[in-house]
Image 1 (tube, one colour):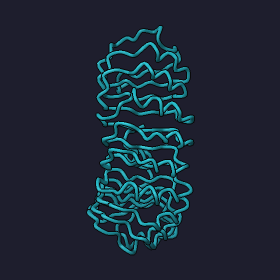
Image 2 (cartoon, rainbow, N blue to C red; image 1 turned 60 degrees about the horizontal axis):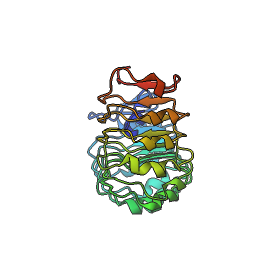
Image 3 (cartoon, helix red, strand yellow; image 1 turned 90 degrees about the vertical axis):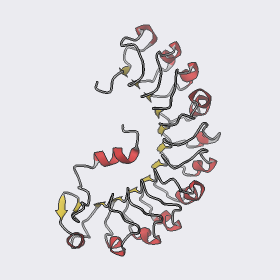
Image 4 (spheres, rainbow, N blue to C red; image 1 turned 90 degrees about the horizontal axis):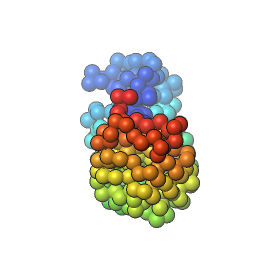
Length: 290
């Protein structure tokens, strides 16, 4: 799974739509239109819309006529705000707002009752506390990316977004998770990549209390070793330690009975590991080309 969630989603959808190009082409579903005007002629069927990288500073009113949109990508623009009219896109399930200049979310976004995935990554001026207050009102939200949002402390209010299953707080300055993070009882996947401040050993205690967490990404965090208390993450099935400075695995890792996949690519690991430490059923990736 790609570290940045927005890129992972875009890759999965690549065959279903094509970005709005500099020539003004728009692709919705598998049908390509040369002009936005032509796309609106099919607005009742339009479900996929990619407006990424178009230099937008505001959203055109005509966008909100596409009432059947389910996936909307507005990433890599210059948006500082999202209009209240976003609530009119009631069928929206995926909203990508990555790499903008958004400071606050409109309260009206809570009316998007079907919204499952929201990518707010790399909006460095985003008011996280205000955003979480709004997001807590979304009944279907399962995936949230706050990567690269200049966060040094994950607010305790994050647990109000109760239905989260995937959370990405990579590319920030986080050293410790909030004490109440185990209250995210549905969380299954957690990304804390590209964060030299993150202390895995100190955070194992909290992570181990997250009963449904099965996948953890701690990649490119400058780890020089895997702490012995990693064994306390006994429910983990997938562990990604890519791009650190790890040269050996602790014997305690063999106590992680549910671990199915371990990625230690781009670490100074020896080509052969001591087999008696590990379950023979465990898949270990030492090189990303494998």
